[in-house]
Image 1 (tube, rainbow, N blue to C red):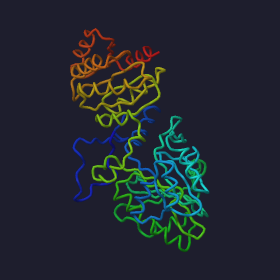
Image 2 (image 1 turned 30 degrees about the vertical axis):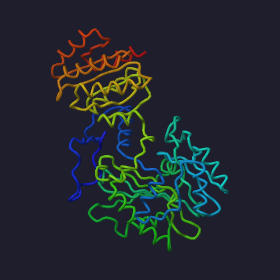
Image 3 (image 1 turned 90 degrees about the vertical axis):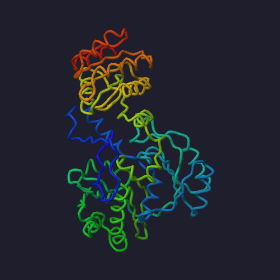
Image 4 (image 1 turned 60 degrees about the vertical axis):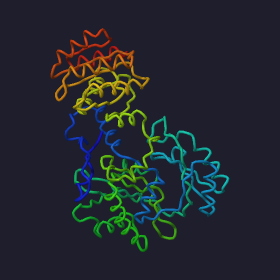
Length: 433
């Protein structure tokens, strides 16, 4: 699903691609916890994440201070990277699109070249589970080898979009590191926010405010003033939705250093960031969600057994909540769009049937822009071609709905027609049991 670009259109920049849709919380039907969870996932999926080594390369382009590091895809190459970097201690980090790598065993401190090789062997080719990935984890195909740093303090700094204020906001805390989420939960007063109005950009007060939050003086304070300007430029010029440094460390000689970095780009603006878009790693994405995006469908995988195919995000969320209300669990969010046709419906069926957990399919289509009989034809075509072996419950309402229900009833296929959404959800739960 595509969300609005974060920033206003710049003069002279390319227009948004024709057909890109604006889906915001303001025009989505109010819904229960399942729908809200999906909304959060859709917002998350509207971002393209960079790996740490890519994010740091980007920050270095904007003069942000980072430790020297190299990326490797084999244990031998990791050892060679450490030798090229020099020094006596190194850190080997799994490259996955998730935080909490340290808690999941994805970061190793090494005191010898042999330890670097062993750490890379233990990480490459496995799936790393962290608090942000769930138990299935993400594949580790690369590691980042970096010189160890002499750390005095760990800070947290991020630039993100404050949608309420319609401007970029710096978020900072003197309590940085692996447990920043816990700090934000139990002691929110330790997390400061400084808004940056788009009309004026980063004025000196922003850097001074961050220095006050972090307790920085001397050379580190001067670096902080420059870093605030550099991060803001990176955020705006790269169409980012998040630029995060955690931890931002103060070394023992009083300098700032970005020890870790996370950059997320607004997927709706990637058409004007071809260089960054080329750095996408499909291996870090849900396979079904990737296939759906290629087919122009909005899809989010869930954990239940009742697949949903709906046209319209709000209607899809309401459908999932009704399934929950009837005691069932939705297997996915799938929005085929307001102008769904037979081909889109067939593509949607193929997508949801690739999930082995699916035990019933609930199709809920409102025929406004497209006629219900066209959708019914797509359902029949998909059921025949895909050899659907699970019950299909179809609720079609709108233009030519009666004709569509008659088509489904006369097909001889295992398709249950329903005229009421609550009835359709109830039947889906019964047939999936």
